[in-house]
Length: 578
Image 1 (cartoon, one colour):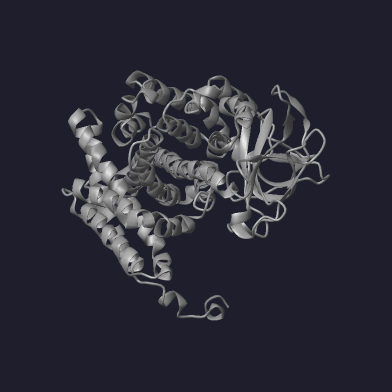
Image 2 (tube, rainbow, N blue to C red; image 1 turned 30 degrees about the vertical axis):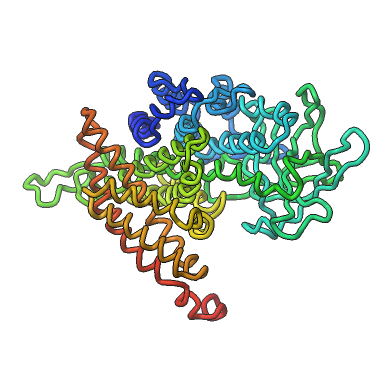
């Protein structure tokens, strides 16, 4: 079926949850007028439907191909990416000093949402470039920024993140890639990079003129573990002082991973320095690479939560279409025994309403997070720490929503959902990576209960949850869920051991995310009722379902969040996993 952007719901989320009018009141974001916002949202929706969406099934069937060290994409990808660059979509929130439009991150979030809903695998290409822009913009030298940012901002060049190594997995501190200082010759002051990185998204491809790899490596004598990691910019093609390309660097794609989904996204094993001639430049200071990389990763984590919204929206849209068109069985209890569209059956309605409530609540949380990030960029007091607390919520719960909604989409299709030709299975396969990369959802939850819960002795997180509880008093299950979260946060801060906090981290993270997302969905419902029109009828029903059913069932996670770690260690490792 054809893809249609969720334009109206996106505009509502941008207005209500991100608070775009308040952002535009600041001189920095003054260009984000209502007319421009609507033009961007409508324009990117049309572009995504016309250019990215038609390639989604082709990309899934044919995938990326590696031959002679070069990765190619199916016909149509190069033209679509060229149109994306030429129309300026990559530059929406880029720094104006380097050719960007300087608009709020909130609007860039909408661009990524539409591209990814149309074609999740393809949209990973600009998503990673955004992260590279963030890292170099915050930590690169002025010379590096001048050399790399203009073409990254435009999208003419793409960016990657190179963390993972075969022996290290999520333990970045265990990496072995080396960076040796060069003391003489044309590259004096730079480093030779040597090592292997795995799971590098869009690490090699034929769509951009250059690929700018950000690579974590160790310098000689660096401290062990994560304290001894440095960040380097390693271009696929060397860049001369005038910005021209001056020959290939010593790096290559060794192989492409054979994956469950996102087939059109080349997931590469990258080898640096096979001939001891891979040249990189230090970004920032030695041994501070992880700090620089986390700048990139925070952006990426929000955008991965965005992917959960994307795949949920696509699966919902397809399930709605199928439920209207599929005729099967009479409505139970109806005197008319003629078969009806399955959308008339109670259980199909239950699944559709759940899919819609989860999708729209996740979108509300996404744009609320984006708006808080923008406030942090404006220097508004308390915004940055609140944004930091929201990142694990949108990344973890947003991607869990993507998986659940895609699974329900398969279920609504029945047996046809298990057949590849319908396309429902692709959404399910594509969705499953999002809870894993950019820090697994377990890592997000651990981050919440260790680092983020520690902000101001828990006050940053609990003030967010108390605000949600107070503003949803007319939805008792939702308000009570937020109160439960406050109580758990206080228990974790005051009484629980580290093991106890980690044991309950995933259910606690889910509870917090549902509480905040439900609050933001209720805000949308109130705004819809005030504005009138079709959303005034639909949105309150969606919000009520979320509050009365999703939030109510989520309260049941309190037992797991506060159970502690003792039961998890009641069996030794051999008995548990033997």
